Image 1 (cartoon, rainbow, N blue to C red):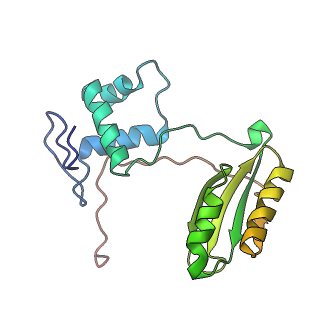
Image 2: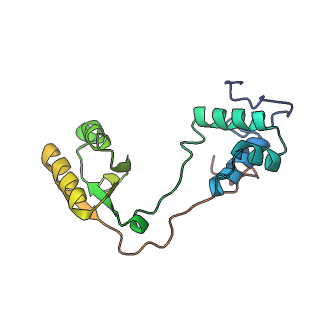
Length: 179
């Protein structure tokens, strides 16, 4: 496998993107798997057939896309509500000098799916999924007490959309004047 990110993983000539990481086949693969990953005995064979490459090349390209960070993870998107679980978005105003401490503490909880810093107030956000509301409340209380800050608990009242897929098949042109 080629780790240089130049797209030279098989017989196809690289037609790399602006970052020099992806060619048109990589973009096709991202388009295919961003909608759904094939639930077949040989998922990479299915991807390969749709992308016009070999199964081995599909495996190598997905591995490289994962290594370069273009793919963060491949997995199911499970609806906590359908399982009777509790999910909530949480926010806190964390002083800049304590953001690493906040991230380390929040990341220590396996029930936290992701967290991030945003501009504005509050500046730190995380999503928490637990089997029940009581456990979420306990975790939120623990985090707040350990950091000495208030944590906002913002459960969704109504979910309108929880799926996203992208069409990476065409290179996106940079709008004039934007860079």
